Image 1 (tube, rainbow, N blue to C red):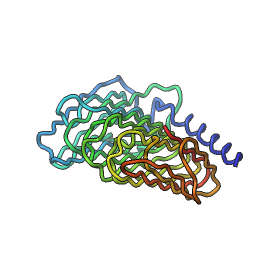
Image 2 (tube, rainbow, N blue to C red):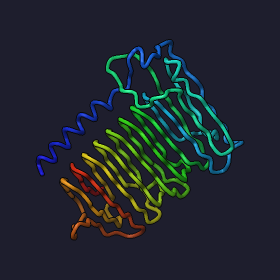
Image 3 (tube, rainbow, N blue to C red):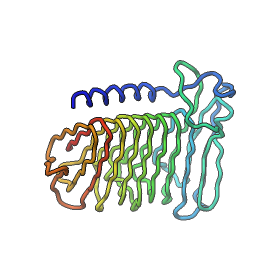
Amino acid sequence: MNLVKGLSVIAALGIAMLACTFTFNNKVQGMSVGAVQTKEIDVSAENTDENVKVKLEFGAGELMINPGSGEALVSGTATYNVEEFEPQVTETQSMVKISQQVEDVNLIPAFGDDVENRWDLALGITPMELDISAGGYQGNYELGGIPLHGLRVTEGAAKTDLSFSKPNPIEMSLLRYDTGASQATLSGLANANFREMDFRSGAGEYHLDFSGQLQQDADVRIKSGLSSIVIIVPEGTAATVQFEGGLANVDRSGDWRLSGDVYSMTGDGPELRITVELGAGNLELRTR
């Protein structure tokens, strides 16, 4: 088991080194670096459906999302110095898409260069389904209080922090998170108010913190390769973790009890049911 832990740590460190830097060569696939430009993004919610889909297609760089203070559906800025990174906004009644004209969103970052590509966006108070697709990038998402009836994140080699500091005011049917070789911290997940969560990853290091207000029974499926995964559930939450793994090490602390291959905690209120399929690495169960 110590060998498994060592392999997992080595893999996670390598992934972190890849994911921490998101600048590019002065010429990326024939694209030239120019002057830094800033584009304002302001999408009104007036002409959209009540449950509109917001789709963000981002190449590589830094993507930040926060709750908005106004009534715009999406607002913020995009800063870039490669012409092809200028965001394009497409609007219909049922969907708003903000995208970059880059064929390969999984561009490999290079160290010490001067390409800029950064979005700083705010989401409004209109109920929406949020779909984020990104390549090798750094993501920082604060989604607390944003009315989301669906969330999907698809990313390549990434370093991501996603949090729900406040409860989602509407029910989310599915939270889907697909990531490659990456490092991700997801916190306040009980506040997301989902019925189902599906987390899939390659090799990496992942912290899934289910703190917050659990408003309904929720099912979570986690499937990962060679990874280090930490699951945190607050004390007093009714929870089970069904482990289905290969060559993996499982550690637990706090109120977790083991019966067969099921780890559980007793508590009042809704129940959190988690299934973990881990190819190899480490699974750590904690309480808060």
